Image (cartoon, rainbow, N blue to C red):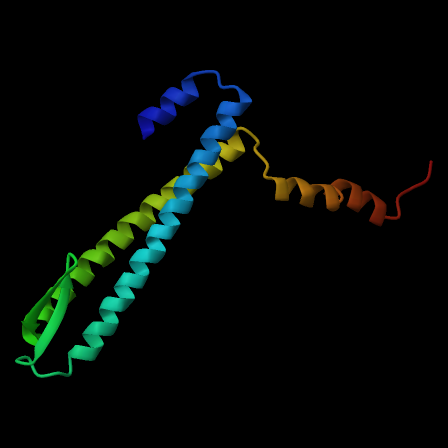
Length: 144
C-alpha cells in the first residue's frame, strides 16, 4: 500500500483523482468497520456458547456447525475447539482494527494534505461565523 501512496504522491493529481482516492479510502474504512462489527458479534456468540456449555458434563452430546455441516461431538471435544476458534477471532479482530486505524490515519492525512472538506463540514462552516469575525464582533473595540 505504501508503494501505491508514494506513486500517487509523485504524480500530479487532478481534483477528481484526489476525491476519488479519498472516497476509496472511506469505502475501505467502512468495509473494515463492518468486518469488525461482524467479528465482534461472532466473538460474543462464541463466548455465549462457552458460558452455556462449560457447566455441562464433558460426556454429554453436543452439536457443532462446521462449514455448514452439523457434527455430533461431546461437550469435552467442542469446548476446546470453540475456545481455540474464539482466540483466532480475537487475533483477527485486533489485526483488522489496527489496519482500520492505519487507514483512518492515512485518510485524515490525505484530507489535510489536499484540504478536502465534506459537505457537512462546509455547511457547518457556512452556518457558524469564522472565529476571528466572532471575536471582533464580541469585543468592544476602539472607534477611530
